[in-house]
Image (cartoon, rainbow over all chains, first blue to last red; front, side):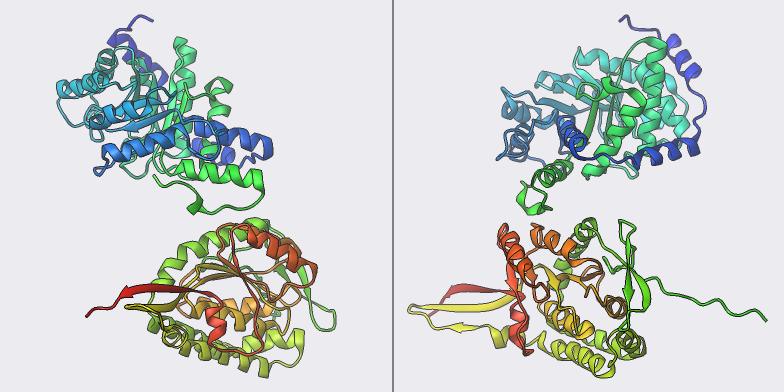
Length: 307
Length: 277
């Protein structure tokens, strides 16, 4: 794909943007969330949710030891049960990319690094780009960047386009996920517009939240972003991934997101290449539900590894 | 003048401090002593058990960490609330079992009795053990955690109180299955608990069919002990086998009340400590 010009891309965002029916989006998301997924389908969904997880730790207290511990969980979420698949990626701060890469060597689990002045995005662009380059040099396979919400809200779409496209460029082929931080954007219209700008700028995946702001990911937000992805693909032929993150703790929630993605984007998006869930405690709840399905007993949270 | 429309009570579950209907939306008919229709009671499902265990697990650390003095106050407050609402309790008991006043007296007194035990149980039931060596060897009862209670079917109110009060006294959070035939007094009791400063989730009362609910409660891996006083016949063996899965303590009531009823719901913990010279 040739890089589209800025004018062309922003024109596309103008054309596809416009207003979102907020009441309709919320009603649709609420209706989809009541869908009942049982038995075999539920097992399939639980397993898929694990495969789509970006096991995440983004705390000031993260240390190489903590990341190694999390890496073993990422590769083998249930140590006693080899049937449980690995998660998609381990998501860490740039300083811990090396530790994560070493701990995950030889596995299928990717290393994702947040970068570009996560979580605020409020640093000069050259510093943010350098952060990406260094994360890549340390071995990151995927980069989670944040847009400058300040610039976007001030109407500076060009700046947002610029930072995303430059980030994709310096990432040099690594998978780039762009966090819109939807909780700070204020309306579905803006969420849709930010989604379109990020996609037009070449990001591989759009992501809801940093997890540092409340509200984080919500079902209607994911629906609006999934619809933007669908419309972008119709217009350009390019398929962009979706990542939901922040506050997703229960298996039930994870399945609701899977339903929304499936109903909006179809089967092709039900794969870790195109759909991710950023979470930490979610994995244990998924494992608990899988055990419940298998044994028929409700389980005990103390039986699962802490992370 | 138009006649006033009667206000009927919907009997619900007591779960996490709230009064929800069953998650399943089901209910069942409750009949009085003479077989007449009294009300519909919520018919709890396995998911209600799951939710109740979750609520109890969440409430437990706070209740276990509350001072014995504070737990005693709350238990006494339950007795106060039952006294205040005794008309309601008596009416509910009377329409299913006839004679009510004595039973309500006994139920209230049970809470007063165990309120007194909260700050005495450790010193009376714990102790300093004689050992051959320069050590203090101390045993003290500690709360077990989340306990399931299947009380006897009747007498509806006292059977329930005689199990709930010692479990609370011992610092546990409980999931209680009410009498299947006479569930209405249990809900009247729940209304007393809800207004007596008992933190939401410390006691959860479910009404429904025991053959449906007991196996789920017994097999739930996050339940630490189960009181099977009200489980009869073949189902006892079944419950004991299910409880073995996570080594639940299995308890039955004794004929007399006393501190042993409290420690039945507790773990005896022993520590060794070197003696200084």
